[in-house]
Amino acid sequence: MTGDPMRRLPNAIFVSACSCFALILGFALGSPRASAQALAPVCHPTVSGPVVVETHDQIIAAGLRAVPPITDTGGFGFAWPDTQMGVIKTGNGYEFFGSDGGLHPVHEWDGHSVGNGKYGGVVTTMGTLDNPLGSGDPVDVSISPNPDPAVNPNYSSYGYMGGGPVYQVPAGMTGAGNLLITYHAELPNYALLGLAESTDNGLHWTDLGEIIRLNQAYMPGLTFSEIGDDPLVLSPDGKFFYIYFPDLPATTTTTTTTTTHASVARASVSSLLQAAFGSSQPHAVPFEKFYETSWHLQPGIGGASTDLLASSLQQYSGYLDVHYNSALQRYVMITSDDTNFAYYESIDGLHWTDAQFLGAFGAPGKGTGSIAPYPYSVGLGDDPRILGNPFYVYYTHLQLENGGLPRKGDSLRRLTLTCP
Amino acid sequence: MPFEKFYEGSWTLQPAIGGASTDLNPNSAPPVEGYLDIHYNSALQRYVMIISNDTTFYYAESVDALHWTLPASLGTFGPIAAYPTAVGLGDDPHILGASYYVYFTHLPADGAGWTDGSLRRLTFTCP
Image (cartoon, rainbow over all chains, first blue to last red; front, side, top):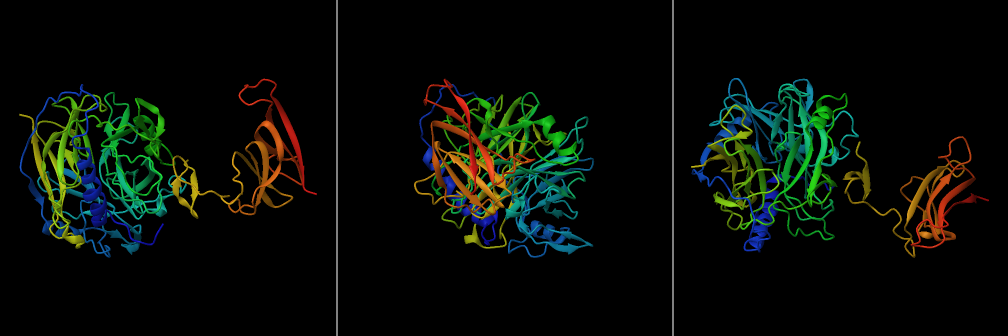
């Protein structure tokens, strides 16, 4: 590992989003359709104009209230949300989870050690759908190493570790009420996904280990390839967690060529919950990537995967967000390539409709404009992970500022999608 | 529990499943590759590696199991001489001594299946 500080923003944006995702979009548009039997959509959503739900000033103010207090952020300030978010409903409102992309140095606070020396973390806030930050103090904590270092030998090598999308274990299942979070971690110019758990509603997070690595192995000098930070989604039969991500096929060069538009991996729900919450030594279980119709060939860590959107007429890449929509009785995927948002549907989570363009919500220009990463859909019913009609899509809006810090002009924005 | 591959001086970068790895003996000439069998040898106080490329066996030693001597040829034992397994003669067969056995599968013809296959054994001795 190099001594260079790693951070998702702004470097990740300039390299991965503006270059990688835009390159893929430009390259793939107009590519021949592989299949003429794409699933037909049942919804052609109308999209509201973006609403700013948290302004830059509101984010800065929340950072000043954060506990433990943020100290040396590496110049980023309170860089929230630096991943897709997680949302659960409580008796009083909503609880939001997202990464603070700033540095979290190890230091003493309130009689104990906090921070892990990495960029990123998990911020928990109590608020409403119109004000996710609320008026309380954001809890800004780092993901702690697993007590058993063998669970994740790579923990010490990450420069970034934060999330993200949360799954709250339902009543009647192992670990009921506890939280699983998907975290985004980075080696130099190499992103991966892992899981962490919280048994105290987000006050502490414990690493459960890696679940997804790109097909391309880490090597120094790679061009950064974004993997996002994606939610766990229940399979149609409820027996598996699905997780969607862009995969980077293995190559012998260090130059990123093209990622898949959407790949998926799965793990048994009962096995994962038992390993995470029913074991004296909490850990994740292996995920398997979906590859050429099989779930039994390619490991989540380093395996190859099938591009689920390879045959879409219009092809967009980038951040992926998948949720079940009970009104449509279909899965819905929202993608953002930092600029363009697209919409897809699926019955089985594997076969998807063609993309429907939702609009351009960033304008990166030549690196001095704005971008719109980290889309996250939220339902308006009792379980925010289940969408209905309408539903919200939150995203982070960032001014690129030629890399200027700390994130001047950033905001949390929201779209409303409605099926007429 | 996950294993980790050794990669450019680090044990904390590359998962065993799918990760990249460093060649611990990149300088053998000609290149030596094939089945690997490694055991600690208490008489030498070193690790010992036996390599079979299906026909020729090679031998290397290491103090730390990471830095190895250049493989030295031990001779040709095939048409096909695969799966070398060193066995110590003391209480723990995993630990080798000054004299030890190397078992291997011998097949008289490549591509003929197991016809006339046999399990064979060499005796290694450090004079």
